[in-house]
Every structure is written in structure tokens, then in C-alpha cells.
Length: 364
Image (cartoon, rainbow, N blue to C red; front, side, top):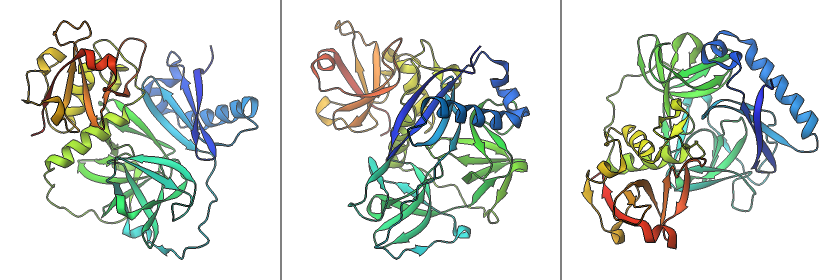
């Protein structure tokens, strides 16, 4: 039995990210076994390098992503960008300052140097948070989750200072709650740095680079500076909308699963996706699209705003049986149907226009 089911290459700057879909039927890839066996990470990296040598020896592979079911359990950087900005004289930001930039634009190009004349090596989305390691006039030098560095315009990023922690274990499970009884939602590796946003007992709540939050054991985190107790800010309406959009975008590519309500279940159906995303900002939606169409306030199609729910009738009989999250510019994110995945599509095409039903604003 092969250790993987499939793989694909994703273009990443001047190279590629190799996504490997692990065989979840193998016992060594069960959550509890991956957590108990530090050798698993080493074996996976060795296997991945063997696959690269066999099939992609002529390509530049920047990083390897290991995917188990619908969850990215680990990302291993294999190539650090050597791009430098010869024309700039950047000012270093000390590690102890632990500055983090939050993306405020809908999407933001990461470039190999501090100007638009440099090549694009990556794209960030609204709400993504990245460590800032240097800055110069108008530009932040940031570190991506795969270890590479790049530059983003200060115009489209908001700086903040927060407590950072460094993973000291070989690999570390990120769990959905503050104990080992909660499910593993992600895997961190030795040396990964993460923002610490809360704590409970022997656990830290951390924020991942895709905007999701989770819990890790304090035993395996080295904190850069003493954590200061501050009152938790109350999210504004726009912050909630931004989080809805960034959370939905982080789930693009997740399989459609009939009755699915979470990544832990392997995927979502249409209303399971919207229910899950809005729960992340404190809103409890009804379970099916027909009932979700009764919540919030009615919105005309001409007044749609990002974060609104848009509803459709597949059979064109005025009975609501599908829902998506409007993201602006005539697009929505939805979980379409069996055999497909969560994706962002244009609703101003004939197919969706003919099936459009109504829209509701949940975040008012």
C-alpha cells in the first residue's frame, strides 16, 4: 500500500510547492500515532525528497505540503529564496519586537524586492498575518509560512506588535481546544514561529498564517517575551466581515461532503460551509440553506456587500436549496456539489443569474 494517494504541483514564484495527499488508511497517519512518533516527520521528509528526486529532479521545489483528508498537517520548506534588494537600505526589526503585519487589501502580491518592479513570488489574502523582519520606505520585508522571505507594500498592511512563540518540539499538534481530547487541525514543526493570542492552563491559543486559530501545549513553545494581559478587543463589524472572507478563502479546495460541517469531517456541503465560517465570528446559522435564508435582514441584489449570504434554486422553482458567501466584485465562495471542492466563482454569469433567489445580511 503506497504512503500517498496523489500529488500535485502548485506554481510558487519561480518554483513549485509539491502537495502530497497522504494515504489516510495507513495507521501511522492517524492523529494519535503522528503525535506519538517524532520519527514520522523525518520519514515523511525523506519520502518526499525521494519522490522529488524520482519525478521532479529538473524542477525547483520550494516546499512540500502534506495533506491528510482535508487538513494540511505540515509544510516543509526545501528552498529559501535568495532574492535580495540591492537598491534598498532596509532597517532591521529586532526579533524581540515581534512585529506582525495584517493584510488589509483583498489580495496582496509578495515581491522579491521592495518595489513593484520586482517579481511576484506569492499572494496573500485579506486578514492574513505575517511576521515582519525588516522594513524600508513604503515596504515591509515579511517571512512566509514556508520559510521564504519577500516584500509587501505598507499601504496594504497594518502593523501590530504581539507576543510570539517558537516551536521547540520536532513536531507539534495544533488542536481545536486546550487539551489533547480535542482534534488536531494542523501540524507545526521545530522552529516555526506563531503569534500567541490567549492562554488557558497549560495551553496557548495561537494564530496560524491562514487566519485560523488553535491551541498548543505550553511545554513545546518558547515565548519571546513575557505575555502582557490586555483586555480582548471587541471586533468591529468590518473586522468580522474580513474574518468571514479570509476564513472562507482559507477553505478553498476543501472537498464537498454531503452533510459535512467541518474540516474534521473531511469537508462541507453548502450550508455546512456557511454555518462553519460564520460560527468563527460568533454567529449561529441554521443548518440548511432554506432556513438560513430566513435569518439576518433581506438585501437586494444591487446592494450586495462582502459577507452577505446569497441563495439560489438549482431547480429554478423558487425553492432555496443552495447558499454561498458573497466576496465582492460579483463573486461568491461556496461548496458546490458532490465530486467538487470549495471554490470562488462569478455569480454574474447566466447559470447563476437564472437560479438566483435572494440575499441576507447576517453581520449588521
